[in-house]
Length: 555
Ligand SMILES: Cc1cc2nc3c(=O)[nH]c(=O)nc-3n(C[C@H](O)[C@H](O)[C@H](O)COP(=O)(O)OP(=O)(O)OC[C@H]3O[C@@H](n4cnc5c(N)ncnc54)[C@H](O)[C@@H]3O)c2cc1C
Image (tube, rainbow, N blue to C red; front, side, top):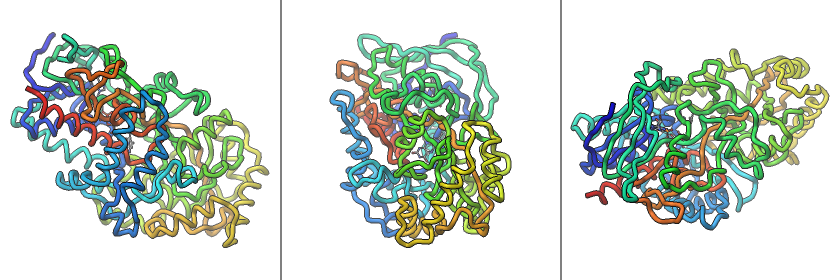
């Protein structure tokens, strides 16, 4: 079967970046074919599952919390984290970084506010960094949570796109898997692919790849917004930066749905597009297996407060600055250097109640459902419902009244190596000894006190320092932390208009890319490290750039 339709632009991928590009195009009266391999149930892609954390700079929310931020400080933090060091491959990413921080410090909030998106008042402090002022990490809290989380970020773009569908400006092509870009006289003019059999699978559930036909679609330009590679463990291992992060892990659990398969990267490359920085990626070390999985090997990331004691697979404490919530890839490097694929948190009931946040819209029904009463319930004693469910059903959780039983329980999980009770006890007791002293030499305890100097953290995010072995704060909890795949930091090289570049540096006529497939802009706006909450915003900024450039530039 071959289909022919009339449109100005074909957008490949109906995730956040694709929706934003489409929104900008239809605002300008352009006609769009929005093509996606998944069914309508998956509209919005990964963003639906996200926590809706948005990196913003010098926002009213920050100012109300007494946070002094500025474009200059944020750019310094960004560049310190990115560590751009490649002349050719970082040419566009450097320019994207500057433009993106400007967007985050300027227009971003108003752009989203106008669309109806609202933020929560307490700004979070994610990715505190490597411990040096000039190095990686956020100098101040910048993680703004969307009231309504990921589904709301999707909604504010989805609604106008659906309204444009009613006006005849948008045609959805669900279950259309693109296999090839059509290039004629050096310009992208369409796509070819496989029509997949209808799927009744719920959102996020892996769907069938059985073919039901073929299609060809043509337009003046093509925008690729197909996401990253995090759902394709083979590709993650193939691109793994062994020199920086040690050997690729044999086993990682999966932080994204199966549709994040990375196929469009190779398809676009074989059509003549340039891919840069493919060895840069952003995976987490605090992964727990979802006890109620939606997609294969479904991982949930703990977004931890700073107090849990972090031990490697052999029971040795991780060195500074590898504290919970500080330096994602530094910690990953350290864990891999020891040759292991998991690590451990040891904490108390008091810590889990205040400090465990789970990433994902479905793990935060109060914020996602915009339920104020339920949200206020977080201030009450006890963990959130989803955290309590993990404590009860999660394969990675051990809850015991005393340390000896806890270590036995950790060993019973059977991930090896066998933990020595005396070794674990030495680490716990040494840490506990420092709690009572106002002049502790323990850098993690110093960091906890620093975090509590920020009012929002003190109230909702960081437990009062206490001894782990104090029964008043018990029971004791151990959590086995697995490595999980998530974000792709490199990708299709693009100009500031999101136009794809060829390997010789010239723009590819008619071909644009945005979102994760473009390394969130330019082929790697984050460089080597992210400041967090920067991915959704990267989809919005680069999708907007593609949509606006095409809206202006087309015949
Ligand atoms: C649980 C979770 C929590 C997160 N939390 C945050 C957060 O708080 N803050 C933040 O900034 N980021 C967060 N992220 C990251 C962020 O959500 C993603 O990076 C972003 O949504 C990616 O959007 P995208 O449009 O580039 O790609 P995707 O959402 O992956 O969409 C791509 C679409 O393209 C389609 N597609 C792919 N290949 C083809 C093909 N060949 N033919 C047709 N269609 C194709 C796919 O089916 C998919 O629908 C989170 C992600 C997850 C999973």
